Image (tube, rainbow, N blue to C red; front, side, top):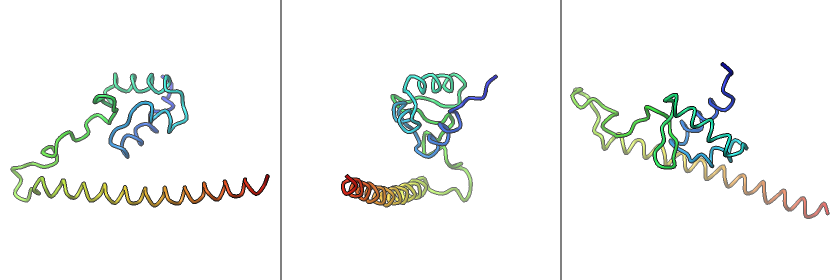
Length: 119
């Protein structure tokens, strides 16, 4: 059995994003969409991922906040607390990505400036 070339990259992408369209996966990997559809279909058949509409996500991912806690546990956190903590985490990640995007835009602008003066 040959080692799947894109599986681990796709798994990491889905872990980070929570779910992605096949076309987005293909774009980020720089691979033809037909190739990624084949890989994703095989991973679906293996039960490693699942599909919800157009989004592919890791199998076994939490579908409901109630899956995160045992409500009978004496120190079980409130679902609202868990949701707020997750929301705070997502907001921090978005803020980090916005900063990274700003840096990339600055680099992009500088490159265009340099290219404009090189001609």
